Amino acid sequence: MRIVDIIIKKRDKQELSSEEINFFIDEFAKGNVPDYQASAWAMAVLLNGMTPRETTTLTMAMVNSGEIIDLSDAVEIAVDKHSTGGVGDKTTLVVEPVVAACGLPVGKMSGRGLGFSGGTLDKMESVPGFRTDLDTEEFLKQLNEIGLVLTGQTGDLAPADGKLYALRDVTGTVPSLPLIASSIMSKKIAAGAHRIVLDVKLGLGAFMETEEEARVLAEIMVKIGDLAGRKTVALLSDMNQPLGVAVGNSLEVIEAIDTLKGKGPEDFYLHCLEVAAHMLHLGGKADSPKSAEKMVAQAIQDGSGLEMFRKLVIAQEGDVSYIDNPEKFLKANFIEEVLAPEEGYIKEINARKVGELSVELGAGRTKKTDPVDHAVGLMIHRNVGDYVKKGDLLATIHANQEEMVKYSREILLDTHKFSDAEVEPIPLFYGVID
View 1 (spheres, helix red, strand yellow):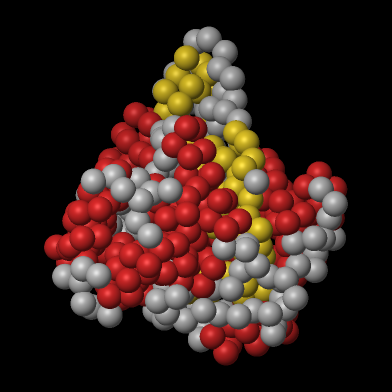
View 2 (cartoon, rainbow, N blue to C red):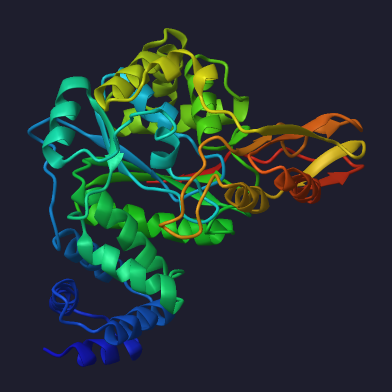
């Protein structure tokens, strides 16, 4: 079997056999496939696509390229969630403690932010001392003891995916839906999740800008989960405007704490309610997502979700006093309000522009080696459909460089679009794929 023949076959729009896909990924993982051949193959996949069977085979080949964590010895059923990335998406920090508080263990390996989407690990590292480098033994021990883990992915999980992604990033092949789907699902399956809820974002601040694109990606990933023996459900959710109010690192952690106290922004709370309910239903803790919503609301109302978040922070050596007293979080040097320049209904708050501005402030990174400033960020106080008067508060800038304040104000005013006519609010969700 020759690598060039596999490339030619996919170039000519033919379906690859399982043996061909497994051979290609195995040789690639071993370093026997040069970058130029791997890039050519990725481009052929981008242009000609893959069948569900091919995509599942590719996913499992990448899973088998490294360590596979077996969570069965630690818990009977482990559930996980994955978001395709968004602006102000701190959902994990609320959903996972609440789900664990309801008796369903959650073991999550998460990532760092790159580009305009924030990373869960960056947010949690706003808490001094919080460890994100647990090894497999520590991961399993903590999952068994408290039913909740949130740590970084080890380099041994799906290493072929890591190598392939690095090539895709510099060869213009990132948008391939089969490659996106297999990348996401290979890491989830290798990390041992028995049940998976996917939060697939769509809109201005998402990788998939249209509902059609998001739906196709969701259907591919759910099919992979099905064929791989993992119960999977995907929610199509909005990312045309930031989720919640806070966009940043410590700002988002504070908002998550407020939400666990029942005091968070309504749109963010409702989003968390929906995602957590689907996790509990998928994990067999409720007969339906609707009945699971009552369990989620109760876990927030009685404080058990917040207490589980405290246990997580303590278990991973974070300073829990920051959770108990959020005013301790590091604050930016300059905190400035942005007021509405006119009266009217808000018809657009461009999530991508907000996310990109937060990166420029220092809350995110454009390269993996960039440092992150945990104190800076933005607060977006309004939603599409809101009516504002001139002088009403639109946003708050948290910056550590004075010159960024004026610049940020100009960007935020450009980000908000107004209308004299009434504007319908944007839906939180567009559908469920299961």
